[in-house]
Image (cartoon, rainbow, N blue to C red; front, side, top):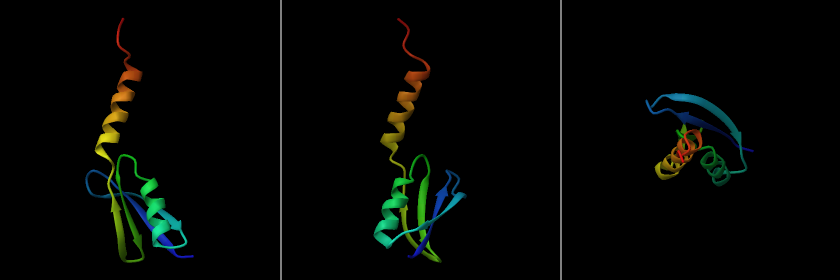
Length: 77
C-alpha cells in the first residue's frame, strides 16, 4: 500500500506536525487527511508530490468557539 504524509500547517504557515498514513490509493488518503482537519490546515503529500490541501471550515470553528464560550460562561439568570 502507498505511503503518504499529512502535515498539520499552523497559522504561521509552518509545519506543526507530520502524520504518516498508509492508504489504498489517493482517494482514500484524501478522505483520511480531510478527516484530520480541525483548527489547522492539512497538506497531503506522497513523497515530493503535493496531492491536496484541506483548510478548516471557518463556520464550524466559529460554532465550536461559540459553544465552548457558552459552556464555560453560561448566561446569568
